[in-house]
Length: 622
Image: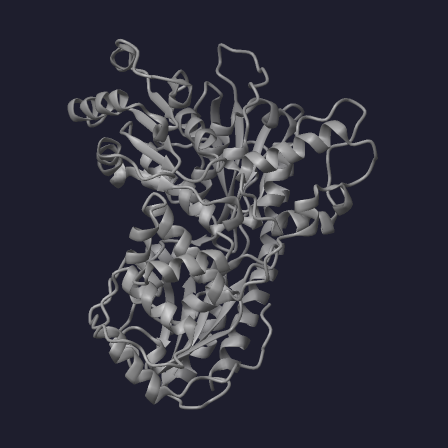
């Protein structure tokens, strides 16, 4: 739930409007323009946003949205009050894609994406970044069409973990000197009502999913998995049988079958960007009896099996066996799936080799977006480049992607260990149908880079995965390789950019406890210290800390903050950055990463002088 706070005094809009015109025409800015507003304009220019944009892009909205399903009753009650045309109400998801809108006002050009990459600075993007109510008025916007618009946005938080699920925005005509925005109370109340609806639904649906899981797992020795996109329940037999790749396939299956989707929406062609005039009919709960999962009477690739209407069979990777997948429904919506796994008919049930699951751990938005993109690209056996700072999990994710698509015996070479293109090794591997995993591409010798470029010229669809850690500027030959793979590359976020994932990573990084000793647990104070630490070594550094504590602790009970190393226990020595400073710091890091650490190129891309970049790097201790 968000909290209402007094809005700070805003700069006079007339001088700000003149400053914006000077910025757009490349002239020096006058004194007194707030740094955060100038930084927002520069980010828009960095992202290539046109200030005179008249036809915003219209990406397809998400086909399913648990947030929209929960928010729709609240929004429908408010829609009639917005018919006067004086203001508009907009709901976005966590990627700032518009899910629903009603009303109209100045500059209401029906944008379908409110991210800064598409439309520049706006209140929804600011609220998402700062996790609090945000206002943007007139010339603070980058787009011409919003110069006479005042908007206020409030983030919508998940009731179970506080994760930002989206935003609620109220926009109206320009209101000079109004503090707070006249629509602030409406935005706050709408977000609070949506969060209450999410809480009520999550408790009900979790109970329904748990009941379905318990019925399916009642048979002794049954390997049962229940998933809904947020929760994952595994019986003991399933935990011993399933590989991480098989679990990942079941997770994707749960998403593809529409967890949280109302089937009526799709069958009626519901447009999530337009208000709905009439409420949907009342439905009753229709849970399946999952003690004997239904078998499909039609092929499992039929339309009915893919829209969550019937059960179907799914072959799992790694030779795990077959999953009989049954959708779980509640009040007319598919809220999750229950899968009963049976091993291959000619094999006895045996525990699967334990693989590190770190590559799958993490629910933060940056991590989910990066891994989802990597999984999508890895489905085809074409080259894929994974980039990121050292220790971000590039190799672990690469191995997980290979296992998930069935490449169980890849040829792995490490450029950090010396020359990698031994006579014929790559050609032999490809001729044998093996995938290639090349680690530390930044360490490749000149001859190896040339050989790899030649290989990709001859085999542009070669099943090749590379990991690359940006650092010193690459030479021309390596830059050519990076340019070739740029369209199929994914950058993994640093651990400091996904602190919400640390609590999920800790049990995956901890070694298996010895018999008679409890697993490693953590006090809340220790967890907060871990989440505040910048982790220059990323997941690798965190893994070393967890392993050292697990092996050398002499006391019982949860790990306390006093047991952590001094740098972690004492927290960062730098001052607490403001939300705008954090946003600017993130933009600088992203620019440096994109340009291989070259500060001159990064400064030019950001539209600032090199001396300014150096000053900010010192200020942010980068």
